[in-house]
Length: 95
Image 1 (cartoon, rainbow, N blue to C red):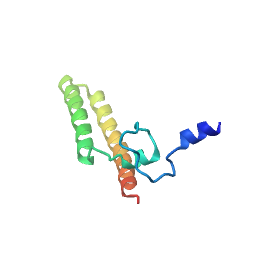
Image 2: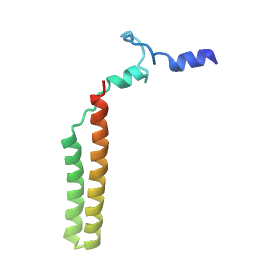
Image 3: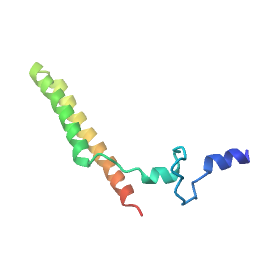
């Protein structure tokens, strides 16, 4: 059991860089080095594009209930993404 515990927790309190030939492991050190790659504008732009296309299809068919549902869903998803992006940015600023 102690060997398993050491194996699973290895590197959590270790500030040393892993050797270049070491296999990648999902450790706290590795997670701290991961950068968020997509900027806020790109994520929200993709959301806008996706819902705009769906909204235009509903508009072309004259489906008012679908347009209303899409409008609500877009605003809800935009709010969720903005909250998540705020959390992501706060985590990136963390020392």
